[in-house]
Length: 253
Image (cartoon, rainbow, N blue to C red; front, side, top):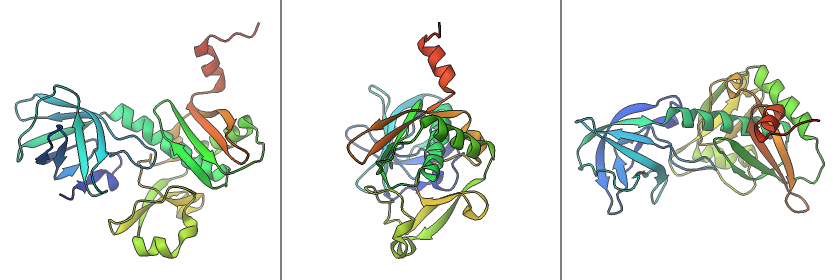
């Protein structure tokens, strides 16, 4: 059954009511609507809880797509209770985790502004994200960090616009990713825009993001790795390099 994915229109929605439409043999739960993001485009799916009418909770270990992008399956942890089809549940996203992923995903977009090379891979994480670029040039990680923090500090608005699948097909150059294509087949594609009138960036993306760059907070490029002759992997982490060194117990004697 096609689900109404509420997060596509409101990244900050962390709770809603929904009706169970199917329960799979392996325990996976389908709902008529959801605020839980399903794993896609390098961003992990949401975790959290489904609350039943009697107050008991069903803890979720992951959220994923089914056979297509119009199917979202909420996967409980082991030995959790199974709801009944037709039962109404209250959904609670693990918000601190989701918000960190939103901040990180937005940081990845900012990095793609500074490094204007084709993207060959990406993965968004709570503590660290990575973006791979098709590039052979040597670049200084501290310089990239400074440029990232400049964009963060300028507090540009981050918002989404919608285009049709046909409009995307007619403008393929707006896609920065070299290997992963934006999700199509739902009739519309989300453009994540940064800056007034997309002055900083605009690219198709189905992930979740913060509403202004300042929310990203302090980030830095922890490492740039050479992955092949023409591939560089950038690792983004929260905090400053100095904080990271202190956490590792490094000392400058």
